[in-house]
Length: 184
Ligand SMILES: [Zn+2]
Image (cartoon, rainbow, N blue to C red; front, side, top):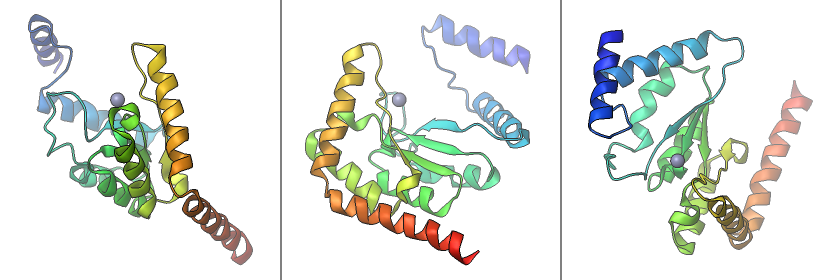
């Protein structure tokens, strides 16, 4: 295995690419990592880029729905779906709803999408996903302004989205938690 890794790293270096795009190696490393996380007392979350990204991804196969067997195989490992899984936000929301260990991160679409697109992503995520399973990140990089802009746009979108539905979601969660405490 170490020889194989050396070959892949060398190849990546010669081709001036900094990605491991060898599926057998990636699968091996991923399953090893997931096993280690499963064995740890309190597993740390693992993040996956899903949906949009650079032009070397296969956009069809970046649908998080393809991750269902992995999600089911490691139920104790918290899995975070990054990039809002755009344009597969609904699929990601479904996974975060039906699998206890899945979370949806509403990042990257700020500022990648126009305002309508950003609003739709937040609305689609809130159609089904429990609010406590929604996360947010700037995905800022290279320039400090990317962090600032993502932060600003996300706040603006939250104000624009029907904030009442947000609070209805939140209150239903609080009610459920309260019910759990009272009826246990
Ligand atoms: Zn990213």
